[in-house]
Image (cartoon, rainbow, N blue to C red; front, side, top):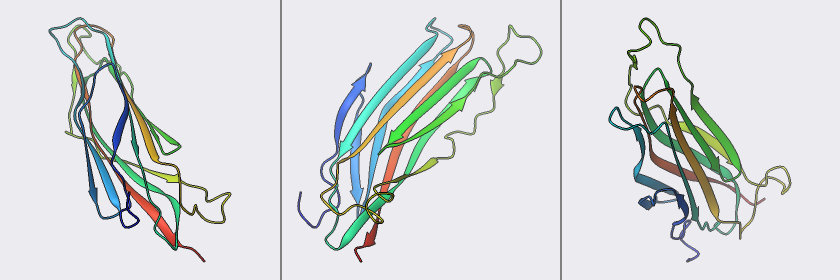
Length: 183
């Protein structure tokens, strides 16, 4: 990695049970990981009651000379469409900070034998997470070299019965490092 670029080449560390396709893109100091096929779907035509997917990535980072890394601003984009008997869970461990987003089962109204759809808003509002890096021990941040950026994201969707349907999809992860001048 050259001294001028902030990010090195991103890579997939782990993906299970399915192998996912991830496109890594950089734009100045920011990078994005786009997950084109990270979707769990429980349909009316199958009897699967629970699905899971785990993915872990690593991207080398270079702290510019005269700067300290104080953290990362991160945005996870995902979507959920479901009936009342679907429980969806996203757990994101992003550079040492954990964020959990949960959509719990909803008590059905009326006839419990007919699943009621919860109105879909399309892709949910992105989840924003800040991960501090060495602020508490290193006098306001880390001087390079620093550990590579790593993230692990777990998706899980389950249903009460085979009549319930739902989709949980991971769209992307956007990361912006926060640098401050060395004083």
